[in-house]
Length: 531
Image: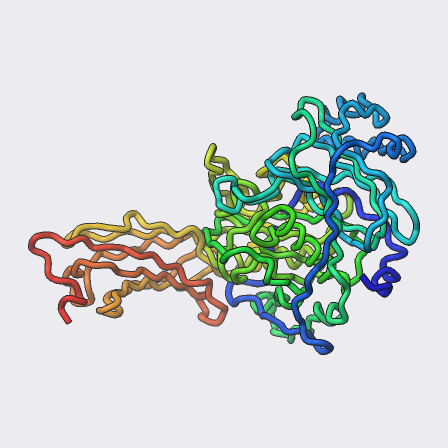
């Protein structure tokens, strides 16, 4: 990195140790995708290839550890992952090397900003500590989180390729490092295979100074209208090197949104953010073996939302953020550490707007509950949950976790007129019999319309009406055409739309389902066969 970035960071406090985490997203409302912006002046964004120095971790340099400072008790407890393990681990003492499986001397390196350790296989019974030397000298030992619950779903191809390891730690620009890896009580024996230390320089480029400039949004007259046109800063704007990304994105469903934090320093400047994201991206892909950055979206302390995993901000892209539930959710990570530090008001507002929009696209109540399975068990979650609600982790930090009720209520308010969780009593039935009923919960007062269409027959029937929270949607398609005759066999699409009763407010996204009328020996040909 250049000396310019070093000067900007010189007076900042060192980062706190990473506690596991991951999550989600773009500022938005009930309708309208985030506005995709280009850089506001200056150099056009271009891919930035982060560089890295990789150091194999083998053996224990006992003499170097004897000269090193003691590991703070808080860091040892943090690395242990639980109070009971922390107590047992602390009793060992940091001068007892009986459980140390790898340790280096104080090693001079090329400049770096991101540090992490990875290994083959999946072990989270290791305590990994690192200290680095910046312009202000050597820092204290810090724990790197080893959290198996932050990563791809275990039954996915991405999960099968993934390496074990820590979360990345973002530090001031440093030119030397020392590492120690201990085996936790009750853990495995010895060092894992292929263990390596990665020191990443995400580069400091002039385009970073302009990358996150967001034009002032026009006054649109109402909170709802303003939320309908949020901004999402693109991967190109943070300089994503698309050449390292693996494969094409995969898509799932959206039933909930998880909240994460990245656990780096909260004191970064606006033009530091692109480099911070590039460092996380590079470690996730080339060291942990994931397809892409784990988070769907990231939000900085200034309230700017950044596109994370590739695949489209409007799409249900499967990330690597909440182990076991990635295919059923999205996630946004707050760039910062909220273990004790509260998120900024701008960050909270971004969460509210994003979740209102993203959950609204899939007709999910931000203040609702949902049952989800990780393949082994089914559990109930709030539709906006913290990472710790799903896995054994401290993420998204106690200070952000406490604000989840506020985020839920704020997101629900911003959805305004909305229908939630529409469901059909059937998706297929026999020709000549009644079609399905449709039910949906409602917020506000809406005017809805349910249409049945056929690819060869066009619009064949519709029904409409008014609904509210006290009078939810209870409608359906009888299976008949406009003239009262039974709809011929074949596939049809049911499409439910709604607007505020005034017809002036933005409508929630349309809900569609494919249904099938089965043929009988005496049924007429399908619409397509009649042509």
